[in-house]
Amino acid sequence: MTQLSTKYIEMALGRGESEENIKETLRMQGISEVDIAGAFKEIQEKKNAPQPPKPIQPTQPPKPIQPIQPTKNRMEYSKKSSKKTVIFVVIILLLGGVATGGYYYFNDIVRFVGLEKKDVYVPTIPVVTEPVVTEPVVVEEEILSEDEKRINAVKEAQIDAINFYATEGIYPETSSLEEPDFYCYRKEGTHYILGTTLEEGNILLDYDLDGSYVCGDVVKNCADPVYCVGPEL
Image (tube, rainbow, N blue to C red):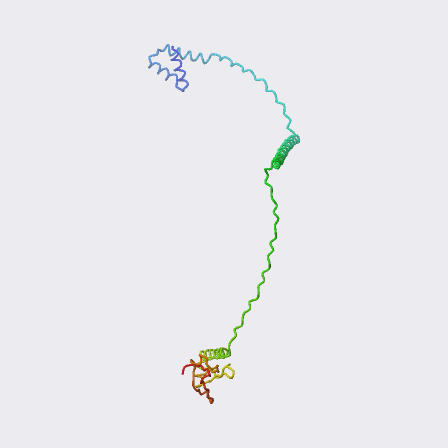
C-alpha cells in the first residue's frame, strides 16, 4: 500500500466518509482488496499506537518583583522648580544690566567724540503788541436847509395820507403837519392838498400845484412861493 493511498483514506475519514464508500472508491481506482485492507489496518494501528508524551515545557522562572520606586516628594519638585525660576530670573537681570550698562557706555562714548546733537537754547522773546485803539467814528450830522426840512415834512405827511387811503378808501380829515404848513381836506375825503412856504427861487416851485383850493369853508392859495402837492384832480 502506497503512502498516497493511506493519506487519501485519512483525508476521506476526516471528511466524515464511511469506510465502505472509501473502499468502493479505491476499488474503482484499481486498488486490490489486500492493499485496501492493509491500508485500513495501518491506519488503525496508528490510532492504537501509544502517543509519545508531550515534552514538558520548562517552567519560566518567576520574574523578579521590581522594587516600588518611591514617588518624588512634591516639595522637592517645587524646590527644584523654584531653583530653576530663580536661576532664570537672575540670568534675565544680568542680561538687562549688561544691556543697560552698554547703552550708557555707548552714550558716554558718543558724548566724548562729540557725535551727540547738542540742543541750543534759544530764549523766547515775548512779543509785545500794542493795544489797538479804535477811535470812535464821528458821523457828521447832515445839515439840512430850512426848505429841505419843510419839503421832508410835506413828504412824510403825504405818505401817511396815501397809506390811510389804501386801507380806508378815503383820505384822512387831519394831518400831523404843523403850521405854517397846512393840510387841506377836500371833497369829503376824495382829495387833499399839502402846502408849505419855500424861499424865492427854489426850483421845486416850478413843479408844484398852483392856484387856490377850497378846503371846507377855507380857501388855500398855492401861488409861489407856496409849495403845494396833492393827488391829481
